[in-house]
Image (cartoon, rainbow, N blue to C red; front, side):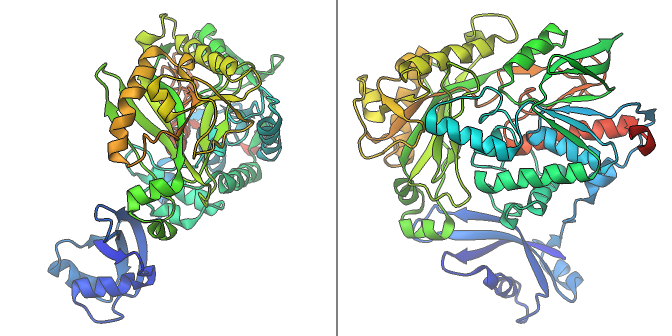
Amino acid sequence: MLRIHQIKLDLKEDKSEIPVKIEKKLHIKKNSVLEWRIVRESVDARNKNNIKRIYTVDFSVKNPEVLLKKFKELKPAEPQNFEVLSENVSGGGEKPMNYPPYIVGFGPCGMFAGLVLARKGFRPVILERGKRIEERISDVEAFWKEGKLLPESNVQFGEGGAGAFSDGKLNSGIKNSYRTGFVLEELVKHGAPEEILYKQNPHVGTDILRKVVAGVREEILSLGGEIRFESCFTGIRSSGGRLWGVEINGEEICETETLIIAPGHSARDTFEMLRDAGLEMSPKPFSIGARVEHPQKMIDVSQYGSEAAAEILGAADYRLSYKCGNGRGVYTFCMCPGGYVVASASEQGGVVTNGMSYHSRAGKNANSALLVSVEPEDFGSGDPLAGIEFQRKWEQAAFAAGGGNYCAPAQKIGDFLAGIPSEGPGEVLPEYRPGVKWTDITPCLPEFAVEAMKEALPYFGKKIRGFDMGDGVLTAVETRSSSPVRINRNEDLQSVIEGIFPAGEGAGYAGGIMSAAVDGIRAAEKICGLWKPMEQEEQN
């Protein structure tokens, strides 16, 4: 097959016109294109009166060599199967494995590490402190409805990780590779829409992602893996700088030579235990701010020029950034078109906000995190876990400002900019459950963050008309955009204790579903390259 770029469709043209467009561009006969598939789709909305969908396409013809000679812009298509991954983890490890490998956490990192190891015959044991997704959904819904938080079953903890209650975004800053391709293919195989394979900014949506998570779980189990829910990782056992076992729920000891630690960014007690056990750690920058909500129709018109375009292209998104006079970066993060602001606390006495969308993105509000950069120098301590205490301080302040019942403090943008408390909503009604308390959110944020947000909002209003609208809503506080700590590892991805592989977002090496999944694959590859699976009879 051949690869061609810059195939353009108007908004009203159907994708079935793509082969016709290819034939016209190359001046070849009608019906010359035999097969075709979309590799990438993007949108050019710079001219709101002439929005184009732009495609990269792989296609086949009878005599491809003729076209390759004639058109320099054509290239042979790259392989679309992801057997490269299987080749990369085909084995080669010589160390005999006496016990199955263990994985801590069943979020994207642990899930894909487990899937790769299971397919290569390693039969991993996965420890997840929370519940399986079906039970977890019920617990989270009860929290949103009644304000009853379960510290081990919430938006942060449980099967699927924090990503299971998100927009399910799959874009990342990492370069495309066989690993990212493998992740996308596997998500589609387990129920995600095929469009994620080529969309410029693919997303799954929380409703579909939950089903995908359950499908991956069932495959790992079918391959001999084990997933232990409500099993908290509470200790490591090592001797002479080498791992030999893990402690579960403070009482059970299981022997293993290999451990992938992928706990997510909110496993604060796990980080404390690992620090006390001697793992080297470093404080890491993160961000703090609030969720900002606007009418989705306003964002659609600003980005596409009309609501009609959004009916074809889907709810519009945005990404904004600004450098403040005080040196702080302000940016939007985890934008959820047609989404919801959700309560995401994992500790008693703290309020944490996040964003979530269903696949349809049909909600009336758009929301995004409006964040300000935080550096380790802001933590007030040299302890590697000082960032956790920094987060906790502002989460507890938000809990108090919200009334002490997991309602979140909220303020209209106009009042925030004017420095006065809000007494009620305007045009935009906040989506946060279990509810909001209208007040002044500035006591829930560091002074430098308040200053930076006030400076950035008018600038963002120039980029997206209405972004600084007076009735827009700010809901505090967002602290969990990324991990505030990194568990140090060497080039072999192992910690100072041999056999321990820190990985994923919580360990400080990823930022989102895709990059966390890829880091889990990398850790699994290392294990496959060093060890060989136990014989099946030894595992039984």
